[in-house]
Length: 182
Image (cartoon, rainbow, N blue to C red; front, side):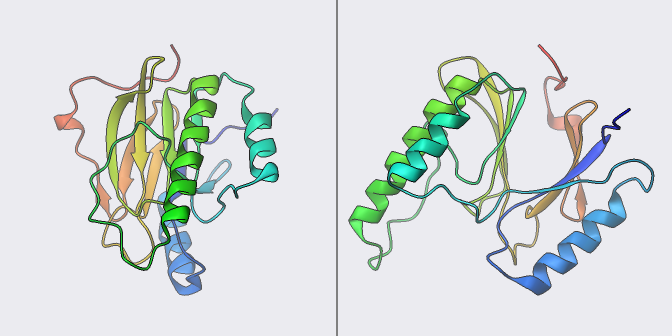
């Protein structure tokens, strides 16, 4: 019989920063139960590239439904405020990123998750969004070097975050509990 972990670690971008990754894995592992399977899901640096190969990959993912979706990029429709685009960024690259986020949104609408976790934006946050098919709890994890929010511990039995980095989560501010299932 296959065992399912009660808690998992989830981490954002590491950008090939080996010392940071090793330290994060050590800290996360110390917070996971010693018994049963131990799992860390990494959300960073495995992007979907433009062109036919990227479109084929996305089309194969549109199999839906699933309760939880883990991605590198954040789908279009999850709004963020960013400073102006740096002058060195090519406008064509920014447009391609926008197109990619739109394609990812289509996949999210096909999969219909209740929870979505991503890296890439280098922001640690949680928010409820509705992309057109009901509420989704979206959690973004920050990048290597962040004081908090690059990694987290998730209790998958009740779908609640227990820690963001070295800080426990205060659930007193949440108005509704998150439960696994529909």
